Structures are given as C-alpha cells and as structure tokens.
Length: 486
Ligand code: ADP
Ligand code: GLC
Image (cartoon, rainbow, N blue to C red):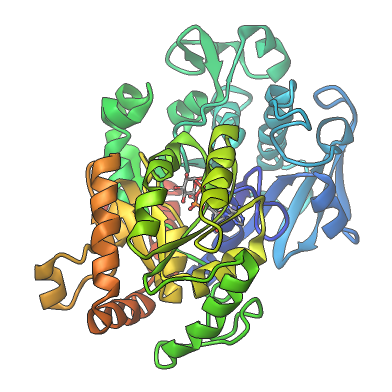
C-alpha cells in the first residue's frame, strides 16, 4: 500500500509535541505490514537543510501566493517530500507562531497549500509516484480530504487522524476563495463551523475514515464534555471513527542504549538509574531529601493541568519530595514554577524551554512523572516514563487511562499496577495522588516491582501499526475486517 502521510511536523526534523513523534515513527513501524509511507512536510528551513540532496520532482508556478516546488529525498531516516514554498515556510522559529508569539497571519494559506500539494500528489503530478491513500494529521492537513472529495476527482482514499480536537484550524470566510476548494464545500455540513471555517471540520466530514490516538479519546470526543463542538459530527460518523493507541519509538527511547544518560540501564540493572538521578540533581541544583523526585516534561497549557500543581508545590516539599520541571508555554505557568523554584532552592528546579536531550535524562533520573491533564488524546510522556522506570502519575482521561494501571491495593496484590491514576482531574484528587505516590515510594519492594513491570510493558508500535495497516486495507477495499477496537 502506497501511503502519503501529510503533517506539519515529524521527528527528528521538526517537533513541537507528540504529533512529531508519531508522524516520525509511523513509516518504519508500518513497513513490516506492507505499507510504503512517504511524509509530506512544509519546507521549513530545518526540513530544507536536512533535505540538501533532495530531487526536484515538481514545480508549481503560482501556488498560494508564490512559486513552489516539491523536493523528494531521505531526511532524518524518513522518505520525505517537502513543499518548498519560501513565501510560506522560509521563516525562523516555530512552525505555527511568529516571534511575537502570535499565529502566523497567513496560517490558512500555509496549511491549505500543504493539503493542496497532497491532493496534487494524489492527482499524479509526480511521474512514477501516486499515493493510493492520504493519511492526514490534524487540522493542518484537514483540507486534503476535502480537496479529494469536492475538487476534480482523484482515486486516493483518505484517513484523518485527530491528535488533538482542541486545535481546529478556524479562519474567517474571507479566505475561502483563496483556498481553491470547490464551492460545494462551503457548506455547514463541510467546512462551515459556527459562522467561520474550520479545516478540521472539513477533514472530519470528508475523510473516508477518522482515527484518534487512543480508544478512550475516541469515545470522549463523541461527548459534549470533550468533543469541543465536534461531538455531533463525530456521533453521526461513529462507524468511521477508530481509536488506535500511539506507540513510541523504542529505539530512540531505550534506557539500555540512550546516549543522553550518564549510565545506561535495563530492567535487571535498575540501580543504574542512580547515575541519572545524580546528574539530574546536579543539573537542577537539587539536594533531594529522602522522598521521590517528581518531574514534569510538558507544554505548559491549560490542557496539561499543571496550574493544579502550582498550589501543591509547597506541600510536596514538606512531604520530603523534590520536583524538576522542563517546559514552556503560558507566561503565568512559567513564572509560577520559577517562583516555586525560588521559594525552594535545592528542592524544586525549573528549566523553561525545550530540550530533547534533557527530557531523556529526566525520564531516567526522576522517580515519577506528573501528568494531571484535563484531557489527553494519548500522551507520550507516560509511555516514556514506563519505558524508563519513571512511575507515571496521571489523571484518568484519554490515552492516560488506556496506558497506566493504578496502584490500588488490589492491583498491587494482583501484580498489575504500573503507576498512579486519579480522577477527576481536580487539585484535590491530584494532591491525594501525590500523597499516595510518596507513600508508595517508601515501600521500595512495591515501587521496584512497579518500575520493572512498566519497563516490561509493551509500549511499542507493533500492535497499533497492525491496526493502522488493517484500517488502510479496509479503506482501500482490500479487506473487510476492521479491528472493532474503536
Ligand atoms: P503533546 O503532544 O500534547 O504536547 P505528548 O505527551 O503527546 O503531548 O507529547 C509531548 C512530546 O513533547 C514528548 O515527546 C515530550 O517528551 C516532548 N516535550 C514536551 N515538552 C518538552 C520540553 N520542554 N522539552 C523537551 N521535550 C518536550
Ligand atoms: C497531541 C495530544 C497528545 C498526543 C499527541 C500525539 O499533541 O495532545 O495527547 O499524544 O498529539 O498523538
């Protein structure tokens, strides 16, 4: 099956969050299942630099405000096709926001262009390469299924994966004429969304199949509490909505071979985590007491619930625990954590920023990672935690609920617990979960068993890659059996 993955980021070329990890990991995970996958990406400076020896495979003369071309080649271990359109993508910094922190004003054009390029590839503009299926990720690729459905017909089928329904690609109608989307899509059943246009809605309406990144989130987004305005549409398409859990790249995330760690370790040499714990303490200037080192590696936004951690910082320290935070995002959260660190030098350390290598050291050197999300489509940091013997403390939502088993006494007794799970996602329940985690940390036998169980649990892409391959085959009419795991 010849599949073109269409996305706005892909690890290791360009990453702002979990979307990149997933897009970067899928091609090699799917290869053993008969899927040949290329990735269509915007030609950001980082992508163009990695694609130095790429082949020019197609030129567009006038393409959303300038000339553009498609460049194909290997980059970062992926078969990449870059949309080289300097007027849209040759800009410094973040893929979505400018230096002033605001969205780039022409985001509608930038990602319409990406989606239109995917449609053109499906149309056969590159000789010898015609994808049979477009696998589109999030709103940035949401228009691709709509072009396929409403513009001049092409044979390609489409799958849209929702990584986060909170990001909806909403723009004003004034931009519609420039999208090059057939006017029949200018309809309340297609792109119209509460008086505006939504690229995500266009995709959800048009795609042959919709997936999201965990079975629980697939249910949640059909409810008013989590659907963010799309619950009705998703209910009406319920037969085409599938929840397929993310895996992680177990090569990039492997404590037995991780170059970012001062000492590597495995499930049978767990004590080797000590060197990372020491290095982490030095890096953050901690002199931990006898309690656990908690950690946060996250975007600092409302979704992640970390505002609920701020008022708990003092209590956590009183109970003998320490905390390291790596993240960036909302100013109030950044300054709130900086203030907590200033109040508790030696016990709370904070680094505002984005640091891939440090995120590995944190998973290896801290004892428990805190993920109190209000909603979480899948979440990857709890999976890295499991893999690294770092106990995840999570709210029971979305993919967090699907991947962590709470250490209540029955689960401890049965030998199945892998972390601490709390519900609802409130400050009170979170506080209780932190208290429970500290208690568990002081039961070393139970704690070490949990660490080992987590490290042995399957967080790879294996099972989910097969589900995607089956779904592609069914959308392409090659098999009847779609996994019922919706
Ligand atoms: P989301 O995509 O919603 O941000 P995920 O848990 O799916 O959440 O993925 C987040 C990814 O980004 C993980 O790979 C995580 O390690 C990484 N990450 C988040 N913040 C940082 C940071 N400040 N520095 C390094 N990596 C980070
Ligand atoms: C989104 C979600 C996160 C998910 C990631 C990859 O960013 O917020 O939960 O893990 O996409 O699918």
